[in-house]
Image 1 (tube, rainbow over the protein chains, first blue to last red):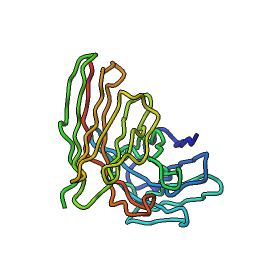
Image 2: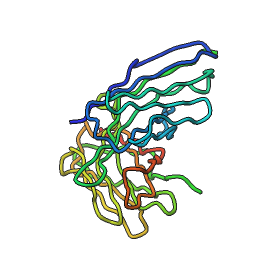
Image 3: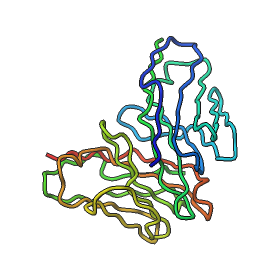
Length: 115
Length: 116
């Protein structure tokens, strides 16, 4: 059974710092890995999607890497801002019966950026 | 383009009742997935529909069921509600052609279900 772990569970840093969020997964037979953010009481917003054949994806101040063989992904946030405060979730999509399975999520990293 | 919409946004039910939640995907998206989010278990996959057919199912009891209509709108139903069914229920849609696993999932705001 696929397990997704996110470290740290919570993080509080001053504005302007660069930071790294970690995600690990136990089954490397993945279609893709996706990073989301969730604001309190809201749904999920997709940040980056990395296909299994890719090593990294970038969007603005965000960069996500994928090392399928070691079962790890990192989300790098450059020059953090208070608006980045949210819970960041990592999710993997596995192969299942010739197609793709539902997403398996980590428990998330609760990030607070102090002004 | 309008995003994924879910109705109702909030719902209060009592144990033993049943409930139906609705999800309208982004226009043109044919895949709809449902997830349950609780503080203890986090986000868990319920099931996925594509072209009115259930394609995948998570590890939930048979009390949880769903369906998809020809316009891709989806409903999920929970019968005989239990206290532990209190959760945020999220719906996600994706374009999902043949290569289903390559799509980004777009989530709605969720329906907050409270079971008393």
